[in-house]
Length: 296
Image 1 (cartoon, rainbow, N blue to C red):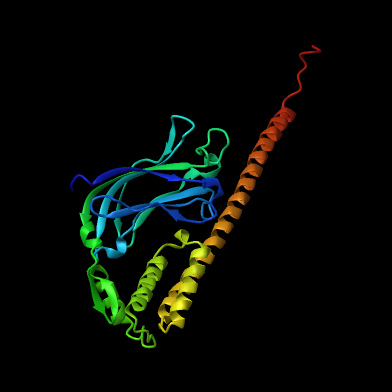
Image 2: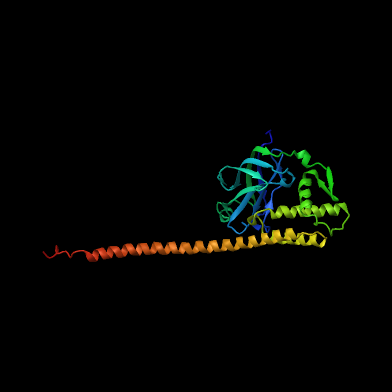
Protein backbone atom coordinates (compact mmCIF):
# COMPACT_ATOMS: atom_id res chain seq x y z
CA UNK A 1 0.00 0.00 0.00
CA UNK A 2 2.98 2.31 0.43
CA UNK A 3 4.39 4.57 3.10
CA UNK A 4 1.26 6.71 3.34
CA UNK A 5 -1.08 3.84 4.29
CA UNK A 6 -0.93 4.64 8.00
CA UNK A 7 -1.20 7.94 9.86
CA UNK A 8 -1.75 9.29 13.35
CA UNK A 9 -3.16 12.79 13.73
CA UNK A 10 -4.23 15.04 16.59
CA UNK A 11 -7.23 17.31 16.09
CA UNK A 12 -7.41 20.22 18.55
CA UNK A 13 -10.83 21.83 18.96
CA UNK A 14 -10.56 25.24 20.57
CA UNK A 15 -13.26 26.80 22.77
CA UNK A 16 -15.06 23.45 22.87
CA UNK A 17 -17.35 24.39 25.75
CA UNK A 18 -18.61 27.56 24.05
CA UNK A 19 -19.12 26.14 20.53
CA UNK A 20 -22.52 27.02 19.08
CA UNK A 21 -22.33 24.87 15.94
CA UNK A 22 -24.03 21.49 15.89
CA UNK A 23 -21.40 19.84 13.69
CA UNK A 24 -17.78 20.55 12.81
CA UNK A 25 -15.09 18.73 10.84
CA UNK A 26 -11.32 18.70 10.83
CA UNK A 27 -9.19 19.76 7.89
CA UNK A 28 -8.80 16.92 5.37
CA UNK A 29 -5.73 14.72 5.63
CA UNK A 30 -4.36 12.13 3.21
CA UNK A 31 -3.91 8.43 3.91
CA UNK A 32 -3.18 6.01 1.05
CA UNK A 33 -3.92 8.56 -1.70
CA UNK A 34 -7.36 9.25 -0.25
CA UNK A 35 -8.61 12.25 1.71
CA UNK A 36 -10.16 11.72 5.13
CA UNK A 37 -11.50 13.93 7.89
CA UNK A 38 -12.83 13.68 11.41
CA UNK A 39 -16.27 15.04 12.23
CA UNK A 40 -17.93 15.65 15.58
CA UNK A 41 -21.19 16.85 17.08
CA UNK A 42 -19.92 18.82 20.10
CA UNK A 43 -23.42 19.10 21.59
CA UNK A 44 -24.19 15.42 21.08
CA UNK A 45 -26.86 15.69 18.34
CA UNK A 46 -29.77 14.79 20.68
CA UNK A 47 -27.68 12.41 22.82
CA UNK A 48 -25.54 13.11 25.88
CA UNK A 49 -22.36 11.91 24.20
CA UNK A 50 -19.79 13.38 21.85
CA UNK A 51 -20.71 11.91 18.46
CA UNK A 52 -17.33 11.38 16.75
CA UNK A 53 -16.65 9.62 13.46
CA UNK A 54 -14.19 9.18 10.59
CA UNK A 55 -15.32 9.76 7.01
CA UNK A 56 -13.93 9.80 3.48
CA UNK A 57 -13.70 13.48 2.54
CA UNK A 58 -13.39 13.04 -1.23
CA UNK A 59 -15.95 10.26 -1.72
CA UNK A 60 -17.75 12.22 -4.46
CA UNK A 61 -14.57 12.10 -6.56
CA UNK A 62 -13.96 8.38 -6.19
CA UNK A 63 -15.00 5.98 -8.97
CA UNK A 64 -18.22 4.04 -8.72
CA UNK A 65 -17.91 0.92 -6.57
CA UNK A 66 -15.02 2.27 -4.48
CA UNK A 67 -14.26 0.63 -1.13
CA UNK A 68 -11.68 1.11 1.62
CA UNK A 69 -10.84 -1.51 4.25
CA UNK A 70 -9.63 0.51 7.22
CA UNK A 71 -8.38 -0.21 10.72
CA UNK A 72 -8.78 2.86 12.92
CA UNK A 73 -9.10 4.07 16.48
CA UNK A 74 -10.47 7.33 17.87
CA UNK A 75 -9.69 8.72 21.30
CA UNK A 76 -9.92 11.92 23.27
CA UNK A 77 -6.80 12.93 25.12
CA UNK A 78 -7.18 13.51 28.84
CA UNK A 79 -4.77 16.39 29.29
CA UNK A 80 -5.17 16.41 33.09
CA UNK A 81 -3.91 12.85 33.68
CA UNK A 82 -1.75 10.27 31.93
CA UNK A 83 -4.85 8.26 31.06
CA UNK A 84 -6.98 8.65 27.96
CA UNK A 85 -10.47 7.54 26.99
CA UNK A 86 -10.22 5.33 23.93
CA UNK A 87 -12.37 2.90 22.03
CA UNK A 88 -11.14 -0.49 20.91
CA UNK A 89 -9.52 -0.67 17.49
CA UNK A 90 -12.09 -1.07 14.73
CA UNK A 91 -11.78 -2.48 11.24
CA UNK A 92 -14.50 -1.41 8.81
CA UNK A 93 -15.21 -1.29 5.11
CA UNK A 94 -15.90 2.24 3.90
CA UNK A 95 -17.90 2.51 0.66
CA UNK A 96 -20.62 4.38 -1.22
CA UNK A 97 -23.29 3.30 1.29
CA UNK A 98 -21.06 3.61 4.36
CA UNK A 99 -18.78 6.60 3.90
CA UNK A 100 -18.37 7.20 7.64
CA UNK A 101 -17.98 5.12 10.78
CA UNK A 102 -17.90 6.12 14.41
CA UNK A 103 -19.57 5.79 17.80
CA UNK A 104 -22.26 7.74 19.61
CA UNK A 105 -21.95 6.30 23.12
CA UNK A 106 -18.19 6.43 23.53
CA UNK A 107 -17.52 9.83 25.16
CA UNK A 108 -20.06 11.10 27.75
CA UNK A 109 -20.27 14.89 27.54
CA UNK A 110 -20.53 15.28 31.33
CA UNK A 111 -17.14 13.56 31.71
CA UNK A 112 -15.58 15.73 29.01
CA UNK A 113 -16.83 18.94 30.66
CA UNK A 114 -16.17 17.82 34.24
CA UNK A 115 -14.31 20.43 36.30
CA UNK A 116 -12.27 17.73 38.04
CA UNK A 117 -10.51 15.12 35.90
CA UNK A 118 -12.21 16.48 32.79
CA UNK A 119 -10.72 16.43 29.32
CA UNK A 120 -10.51 20.15 28.61
CA UNK A 121 -7.52 22.40 29.16
CA UNK A 122 -8.00 26.10 28.49
CA UNK A 123 -11.20 25.15 26.69
CA UNK A 124 -9.37 22.90 24.21
CA UNK A 125 -10.33 19.31 23.42
CA UNK A 126 -7.73 17.08 21.75
CA UNK A 127 -8.84 14.13 19.64
CA UNK A 128 -6.35 11.53 18.47
CA UNK A 129 -7.01 9.34 15.44
CA UNK A 130 -4.94 6.48 14.11
CA UNK A 131 -5.86 5.29 10.62
CA UNK A 132 -4.46 2.43 8.58
CA UNK A 133 -5.82 1.70 5.11
CA UNK A 134 -5.43 -2.04 4.59
CA UNK A 135 -7.00 -2.36 1.14
CA UNK A 136 -8.30 0.12 -1.46
CA UNK A 137 -10.69 -0.72 -4.30
CA UNK A 138 -11.23 2.05 -6.85
CA UNK A 139 -8.05 4.06 -6.43
CA UNK A 140 -7.69 7.77 -7.14
CA UNK A 141 -4.33 9.52 -7.01
CA UNK A 142 -4.30 12.86 -5.24
CA UNK A 143 -2.58 14.41 -8.26
CA UNK A 144 -5.55 13.38 -10.39
CA UNK A 145 -8.02 14.77 -7.89
CA UNK A 146 -6.42 18.21 -7.79
CA UNK A 147 -6.09 18.40 -11.55
CA UNK A 148 -7.63 21.50 -13.16
CA UNK A 149 -8.76 19.49 -16.21
CA UNK A 150 -12.51 19.82 -16.67
CA UNK A 151 -15.02 18.43 -19.13
CA UNK A 152 -18.19 19.91 -20.55
CA UNK A 153 -21.59 18.33 -19.92
CA UNK A 154 -24.52 20.37 -21.19
CA UNK A 155 -22.62 23.56 -20.47
CA UNK A 156 -21.53 22.47 -17.00
CA UNK A 157 -17.75 22.47 -16.54
CA UNK A 158 -17.06 19.41 -14.42
CA UNK A 159 -14.14 17.38 -13.15
CA UNK A 160 -13.78 14.14 -15.06
CA UNK A 161 -14.55 12.24 -11.85
CA UNK A 162 -17.95 13.96 -11.67
CA UNK A 163 -18.96 13.14 -15.23
CA UNK A 164 -20.46 9.72 -14.58
CA UNK A 165 -22.72 10.92 -11.75
CA UNK A 166 -23.91 14.01 -13.64
CA UNK A 167 -24.46 11.99 -16.82
CA UNK A 168 -26.66 9.52 -14.91
CA UNK A 169 -28.49 12.42 -13.31
CA UNK A 170 -29.24 14.15 -16.63
CA UNK A 171 -30.22 10.85 -18.24
CA UNK A 172 -32.71 10.00 -15.50
CA UNK A 173 -34.04 13.55 -15.17
CA UNK A 174 -33.73 15.17 -18.64
CA UNK A 175 -36.15 17.91 -17.59
CA UNK A 176 -33.91 19.03 -14.75
CA UNK A 177 -32.61 22.17 -16.53
CA UNK A 178 -35.35 22.77 -19.08
CA UNK A 179 -36.17 26.16 -17.51
CA UNK A 180 -32.61 26.98 -16.48
CA UNK A 181 -31.63 29.59 -19.04
CA UNK A 182 -28.38 30.88 -17.53
CA UNK A 183 -25.59 30.67 -20.11
CA UNK A 184 -22.74 31.81 -17.88
CA UNK A 185 -20.55 28.74 -17.46
CA UNK A 186 -19.36 29.72 -13.98
CA UNK A 187 -22.93 30.10 -12.74
CA UNK A 188 -24.03 26.87 -14.39
CA UNK A 189 -21.15 24.97 -12.84
CA UNK A 190 -21.79 26.58 -9.45
CA UNK A 191 -25.43 25.52 -9.50
CA UNK A 192 -24.52 21.97 -10.51
CA UNK A 193 -21.96 21.79 -7.68
CA UNK A 194 -24.68 22.93 -5.29
CA UNK A 195 -26.99 20.22 -6.60
CA UNK A 196 -24.34 17.54 -6.11
CA UNK A 197 -23.72 18.80 -2.58
CA UNK A 198 -27.45 18.61 -1.83
CA UNK A 199 -27.59 15.02 -3.03
CA UNK A 200 -24.58 14.09 -0.89
CA UNK A 201 -26.15 15.79 2.13
CA UNK A 202 -29.39 13.84 1.79
CA UNK A 203 -27.47 10.58 1.43
CA UNK A 204 -26.45 10.87 5.06
CA UNK A 205 -28.42 9.16 7.79
CA UNK A 206 -31.04 11.22 9.68
CA UNK A 207 -28.91 10.98 12.82
CA UNK A 208 -25.99 12.67 11.08
CA UNK A 209 -28.12 15.61 9.93
CA UNK A 210 -29.32 18.36 12.22
CA UNK A 211 -32.47 20.39 11.75
CA UNK A 212 -30.23 23.29 10.74
CA UNK A 213 -28.72 21.12 7.99
CA UNK A 214 -32.21 20.35 6.69
CA UNK A 215 -33.21 24.02 6.82
CA UNK A 216 -30.10 24.99 4.84
CA UNK A 217 -30.80 22.21 2.33
CA UNK A 218 -34.36 23.48 1.92
CA UNK A 219 -33.10 27.02 1.33
CA UNK A 220 -30.57 25.78 -1.24
CA UNK A 221 -33.26 23.75 -2.98
CA UNK A 222 -35.49 26.84 -3.13
CA UNK A 223 -32.63 28.85 -4.65
CA UNK A 224 -32.10 26.26 -7.38
CA UNK A 225 -35.83 26.00 -8.08
CA UNK A 226 -36.08 29.78 -8.41
CA UNK A 227 -33.17 29.66 -10.86
CA UNK A 228 -35.16 27.33 -13.11
CA UNK A 229 -34.15 23.81 -12.05
CA UNK A 230 -36.93 21.23 -11.90
CA UNK A 231 -36.21 19.25 -8.77
CA UNK A 232 -39.53 17.73 -7.71
CA UNK A 233 -37.78 14.39 -7.15
CA UNK A 234 -35.19 15.99 -4.86
CA UNK A 235 -37.88 17.90 -2.96
CA UNK A 236 -39.58 14.56 -2.24
CA UNK A 237 -36.30 13.20 -0.91
CA UNK A 238 -35.90 16.26 1.32
CA UNK A 239 -39.47 15.85 2.63
CA UNK A 240 -38.77 12.17 3.23
CA UNK A 241 -35.61 13.01 5.15
CA UNK A 242 -37.41 15.65 7.23
CA UNK A 243 -40.12 13.11 8.07
CA UNK A 244 -37.53 10.50 9.06
CA UNK A 245 -35.73 13.10 11.20
CA UNK A 246 -39.00 13.98 12.95
CA UNK A 247 -39.74 10.30 13.59
CA UNK A 248 -36.20 9.78 14.86
CA UNK A 249 -36.50 12.63 17.36
CA UNK A 250 -39.96 11.49 18.48
CA UNK A 251 -38.67 7.93 18.79
CA UNK A 252 -35.70 9.03 20.92
CA UNK A 253 -38.04 10.92 23.25
CA UNK A 254 -40.38 7.93 23.53
CA UNK A 255 -37.46 5.53 24.17
CA UNK A 256 -36.24 7.81 26.94
CA UNK A 257 -39.74 7.94 28.45
CA UNK A 258 -40.08 4.15 28.34
CA UNK A 259 -36.63 3.73 29.90
CA UNK A 260 -37.68 6.03 32.75
CA UNK A 261 -40.96 4.10 33.19
CA UNK A 262 -39.07 0.81 33.17
CA UNK A 263 -36.62 2.15 35.75
CA UNK A 264 -39.54 3.09 38.03
CA UNK A 265 -41.17 -0.32 37.51
CA UNK A 266 -37.92 -2.13 38.35
CA UNK A 267 -37.65 -0.10 41.56
CA UNK A 268 -41.26 -0.93 42.45
CA UNK A 269 -40.57 -4.63 41.77
CA UNK A 270 -37.51 -4.48 43.98
CA UNK A 271 -39.53 -2.84 46.78
CA UNK A 272 -42.31 -5.40 46.42
CA UNK A 273 -39.82 -8.28 46.56
CA UNK A 274 -38.35 -6.87 49.77
CA UNK A 275 -41.84 -6.42 51.23
CA UNK A 276 -42.75 -9.98 50.18
CA UNK A 277 -39.74 -11.44 51.96
CA UNK A 278 -40.64 -9.50 55.07
CA UNK A 279 -44.26 -10.76 54.97
CA UNK A 280 -43.05 -14.34 54.48
CA UNK A 281 -40.86 -14.09 57.56
CA UNK A 282 -43.72 -12.69 59.62
CA UNK A 283 -46.06 -15.41 58.29
CA UNK A 284 -43.55 -18.11 59.12
CA UNK A 285 -43.26 -16.75 62.64
CA UNK A 286 -47.05 -16.69 62.99
CA UNK A 287 -47.31 -20.35 61.93
CA UNK A 288 -44.68 -21.54 64.40
CA UNK A 289 -45.64 -23.47 67.56
CA UNK A 290 -45.70 -21.59 70.82
CA UNK A 291 -42.73 -22.49 73.00
CA UNK A 292 -43.23 -23.47 76.64
CA UNK A 293 -39.53 -23.60 77.43
CA UNK A 294 -39.79 -20.51 79.57
CA UNK A 295 -42.52 -21.88 81.90
CA UNK A 296 -41.83 -25.63 82.04
